[in-house]
Length: 139
Image (cartoon, rainbow, N blue to C red; front, side, top):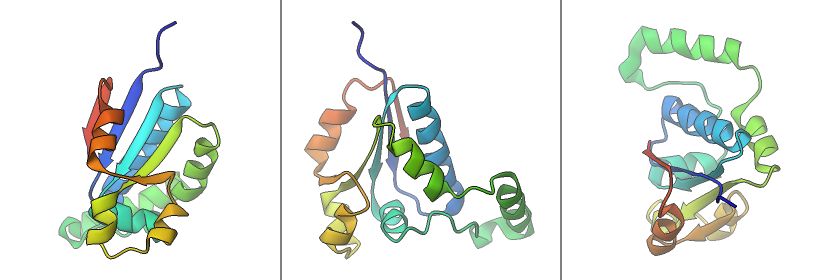
């Protein structure tokens, strides 16, 4: 029997557009039956832990176009990313891990982080899990 295909996302950025992309790709891959992992680092980790990934404010670098895109995203996707992510995680093939060093560097409370992710793990474990993945993305 062939192993499930692995889909890996290394999430670093905390901007809404990149978090949106991270979550939508992960839930799509998991819904397709792929063994899906999100590894959280730095600002992506902070946004997940603080449950701020539904703030549709884009970076000021996008100017007026960003405001328009943000409005369209809210109109087209009225269900929150947090809600969708929670439902897909119940399927069991989407795991979210925080990097041990990133938790410390971002000054996050370990107990709080553990309540939001499947576990806090080090880079060697992250690389072991990611090894042999069919898809690896850095966002």
